[in-house]
Image 1 (spheres, rainbow, N blue to C red):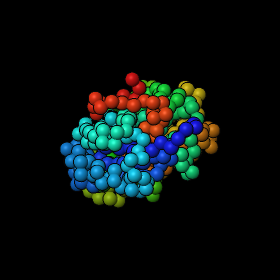
Image 2: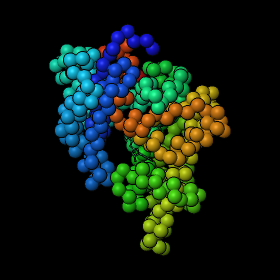
Image 3: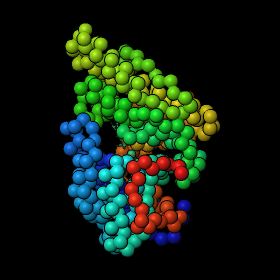
Image 4: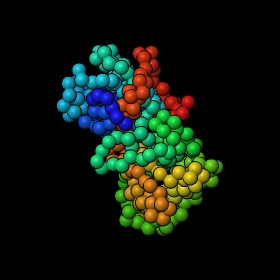
Length: 343
Ligand code: KG4
Ligand code: ZN
């Protein structure tokens, strides 16, 4: 990629419960500000109405901060990129409306971005701590809202090989954590306790789902029944066995993900594997990928943590790539809660 000039992209992400703004100079991130909404913790999950209100409060300061940290004047901005979807409609509306108005105010083009495409293309952010996959590669996108295996042939040629039929993998973590009495979001806590426990202490059934698709809702139910049964005999069961329970849940979830990923690699004969999404922070998933690198010769790509969780820098890199293609959008654009990766 050989850009002719300096392109500054101001990017905005507001699809769920993080308000984020970033500034990129070509494919480099100058700033990436994320305002995480703490308000949802008290409710044990994201409350859509509260999320959109918090976005309204956070968006102006987030954009100001992103520009200040990047140390550029807004007059230098070449284009505004924003998340059009998928996500919570009320949340998306805030970012979409703001991006549209700002593009009018600054008289710069507008670029709409698919959030799932952005998770995948975050690997193309130029960063000394990250390596970039070449095409084709397989992407596993795992977060609180998504679980997909995608064959990526080029920046904008992607094929979904499989996805979840019900809960996302992050939801499976968070719902399991809730059953164990852990606060939201419970994924990182399950991971923390799992590292201290025996992954084979308890066994949970793996769902039988065809092809490369996933299902996690049955796992949640079997964990619930298991905990109810055991606490009947011993009310202190969870407390006494938290490490082993978490390790066993983690072992099951990572096993489900890796089984499908291995199948996808085999079927496509593409052994470059890139992960993305908040659950990529998980220690067992990272270890399992490293293991496949050793035993199966995979090339594995894991973005920096700040580009795994929802962030505007990943929206910015897609904005930059679309800018190079001249792919702009007009003011008639609307937010899209269900927005497919491939049309
Ligand atoms: O990408 P993300 O920040 O937001 C969504 O788009 O959902 O992902 C958040 C999800 C939550 O479900 C959280 O519990 C999970 O990622 N998560 C983890 C870990 N860190 C975050 N799950 C398991 N292990 C972790 N270390
Ligand atoms: Zn996401």
